[in-house]
Amino acid sequence: MKNSVTFLLPCANGQLQYRSLPIYQRLLLRLLFPLCRQIIVKHFKLNSKEAYERRSLRIREIMNIISARLADGRKYLTGNQLSYIDIAFCSIAALLVIPESFGGAQIPESLRPTKNLQQYPSAIVDIVDEMRKNPAGKFVLRMYEDHRST
Image 1 (spheres, rainbow, N blue to C red):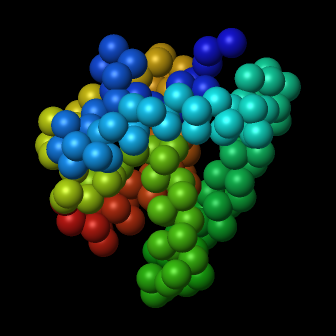
Image 2 (image 1 turned 180 degrees about the horizontal axis):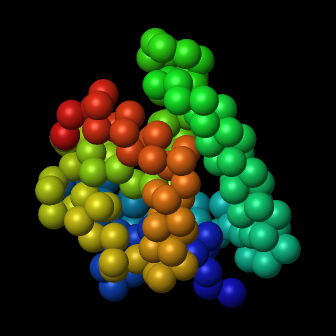
């Protein structure tokens, strides 16, 4: 069962982007990625539709909890100052909303996920779109815009 969870985000045509890596890292990646992917899928039961649904529900619950916390108009999760809690949450949730500066300046412009989002499976694009509309997702986008330069 190939779904958005087991895809693990290779780039266009299912190929991993690794042209900028040193040759030894390219070789290791080619050899080890399929094995690592298989281990991750098996260990986390990513082929299970039920597990996928449970995890998706839990992610939505967490995003809604954060949204409720922000509903009173606060600028940051703990009040009026940026804290490690904001940074930790936004670092993790960035995988769901893929902010413009996601990945930092070291990633070439052509390889940035935001520039290539439509190449991913529609299930991933749908999740990103949904999470970007959530108030917690909007918070993550704002934090990346305000506090992280490209």
